Image 1: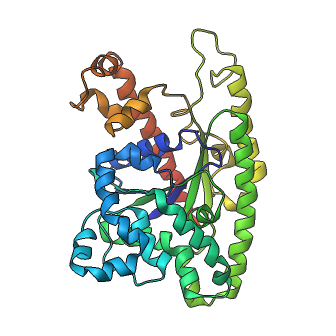
Image 2: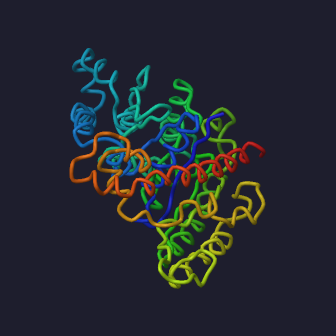
Image 3: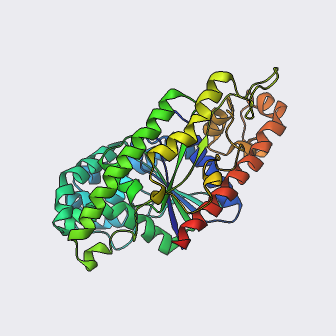
Length: 371
């Protein structure tokens, strides 16, 4: 059964893209078939995963379709058939719904990043789709077909790709916004996780998420009350579940005797220990996966990925590969070889850290099947 997972924090700059990219690679390396969908209009995951030249190859043929999908398609149907045979952005795929025109018979293929791992890239124009989500939201309560299609299309696209390609997990990358688009992405997923830095802003961001979830849940409960069983089928059977959090990008204390269990600087530790309490006071227990509370209060994978990687992620992004592949990738530029080779063990050890994270996450996702 395919699981739709959203990675979200209301605070930007917490390393969400780095975590998502490496989690996906870890899951793929463990034999899970994974699809990444970049739903952040800033496209950070796309930039991490593929080159700028590849992004241009995807975006440029789409430009006229983003302006007017139906007119461009009808103007040259043979050209359209060629365009849709190649990987396209998520906005291109959502554009027929945005414009209220017919959906294509087949979806564009995803980009294969490596064995078991694919990507549907983002696009800077995705804000246009979000505007339609907000504009048509009131129509969902009235059972308007186009409004329902607009609200649920991201979920249905994810499930269509999963059915065709056999994905086990679809990871929906999001912006830090609590706007209309993320309301639908997060609420209609099976589960979501929160990466957070050890700082004041992440703590307040978690509070905002809790408040938003309560509001969104009330909205969807009202919608389900008014919709027929047939139209209700476009939505998941239940509201999204919180599957856990991880402290991320925390600075490990070095050269000094640790004064706390996590070995963090005092200021970081102060916020690190506040995160689970903030989560449990902000998110309803009924909206959490059914596992022991003690486990939910731990970072996913315990302490496996909580510490900062320093400059390693920036080099990984440069080569569009996970950190552990860099020492043996064979494509490093001359100036990067000494840096990577001199820290080979550090780079390669990140694999076991993300495997631990991925294994714990898989157990938590399995818990969603028991409801």
